[in-house]
Figure (tube, rainbow, N blue to C red):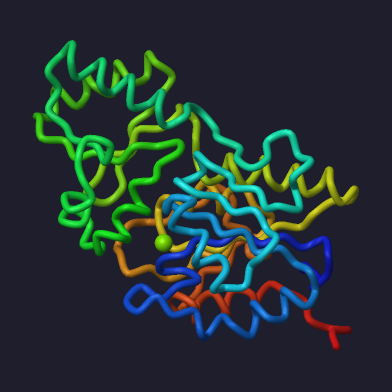
Length: 274
Ligand SMILES: [Mg+2]
């Protein structure tokens, strides 16, 4: 069972996990956030949102001086204090956004594929697609390593499009109403592994990792950590994990930040704590 000390490293999804599915509150988790900060335990936001969307939220959560993982693992934002790191300020896995856009444009020109990405439209259109306010939509459009798109063509063309993307070292994944184009092999789990390795190297000792998430796009993260908290989700998709051992995986009965608290209550050994 992990102890509350500087060998602990936490990775968390936002929507439906640390943040309430409906009102985005994290109040039930605040006690733990304060305790973790007091013990210098990094809480690494691991989300599908863009870095531009996460920055303000990270400050509001008071998770300062900590890296975060954006765009489902395509991007890791490193804080000021990591300024000497070779990858600072950003580690981008797979392909940079400009490169992804170029490949999509070229395939569309050549084969007449019918799709629109965030880079093809204005903030009003993205707001319409997502339900975000226009100024929020602009932050969601500040992409660095992945492109969400709406597919207007048929299934057969989508398969062909996917095949051509694969030939270019890109992949296509489904997320809600959008398809996402990003570098092949990019995932939250891959980014978690990279960052856990960097922490091990910087701190000079092994780290114990806990991951918390509620959705299918969190599975790779939950596989990559030592202890996984599967937060009860507002969806009916299965959340299968390869290693379901009792001391490795905990499935919460509560939703969102209540489940988040329940998961850390379960896993973190608090004895000897002030
Ligand atoms: Mg979620």
